[in-house]
Length: 110
Length: 112
Image 1: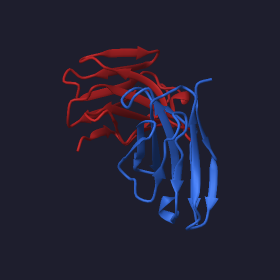
Image 2 (image 1 turned 30 degrees about the horizontal axis):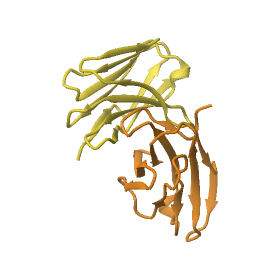
Image 3 (image 1 turned 135 degrees about the horizontal axis):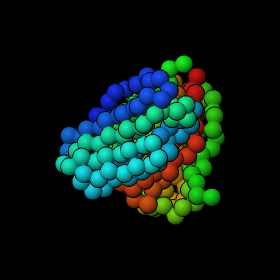
Image 4 (image 1 turned 180 degrees about the vertical axis):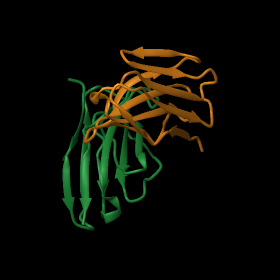
């Protein structure tokens, strides 16, 4: 079946360093969405990308959707403690369902 | 305020005692879904509903039931809970299945 692989599983960064998480699909996606889950919280929708090659920015966060609509990335510039949490990608599949990546946990080193 | 409301937030129960976790949304969304989240396994879909009276199995439906008699409500029923159903459960809704989801705050279930 359709799968979305997300890497890395964890990323430890010093505050102020950059963070990137990547998602790759085995098939073409209709869209890609990104969610953030704070520790102890629930996933919160961040953004949706629909077009091939689309790039969107939200302050220090940059989201990209690949030309083939099979991969995506989320890049955070100059991480802050408020960025801590798990970031999930989810791709629109062929059966009108979302296919979820396993998430990347962002950990800020003390 | 647009939201998905789940109850209860925390529940400890014993093996075999039927329970229901409620989920309600006030956004007139067509699509609703239940997920469980376990450490290292991400979000796994249990059941989903495209519309009233239309439900379908997700990836891990065994041991669960759902119903969608009204658009706003989508309860999750565990007829005979077992310890392997101890997990964090999330209800989510969306305009349709591939649009942005709004999640409830979660229900942490422990079955002893």
